[in-house]
Length: 265
Image (cartoon, rainbow, N blue to C red):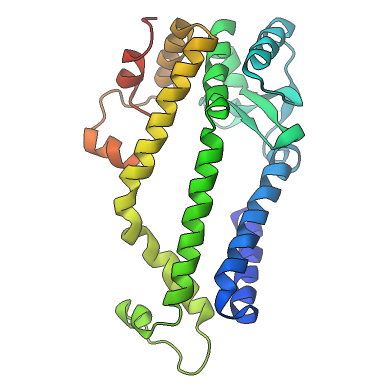
């Protein structure tokens, strides 16, 4: 799937590098943003069903409870669906996906099998907290801003001989080095941006705590605490991770930190 999507996108970027002059990076960014928007629209109804089965939520009592929650939160979705996540793992989750009228709420079958209706409602309230607190929009702005800065940097580096020589590669003289510049940039970027990892992880962890607080206001915080305990047990998550590892790699706060901010289960 990565090759099916990534190779045409890489070919488009290389074409833009050759055809769009010095501002190719700006056109490449516009294409990247448009591609991501299209992916958000197509993912729920076209791409995701290629890998999992989605069925309408059959539990009418739970459906009414979830719809009441969404109404309180001002969230509209086209439907409530159950995904056969158990076909690959015991991981349990709930999420919403899509844009505008194409939004769907999806529950893993493992989540429904493990949690009570109140706990399912609390987990979904947490996910809706990301929507109401505009975390999704903020993350999209951060990602698109970072991609614009990265492409602009590549646009400048591609014309600098020191960029190639510093990485131990001899560039072609008098001919474009578009593919070479793109490959070298993709290989060199992760080590040079590793120091930014704590910043992104810290923002993500703060968003998770804000979503937990929202869930406590819209549902029972004790249900959310019980759900977190069950989910951490099922996912075999580390309960006492190294603090420095958390700062660099954890997008969610450790279980103990989240539970300390919630009512006792």
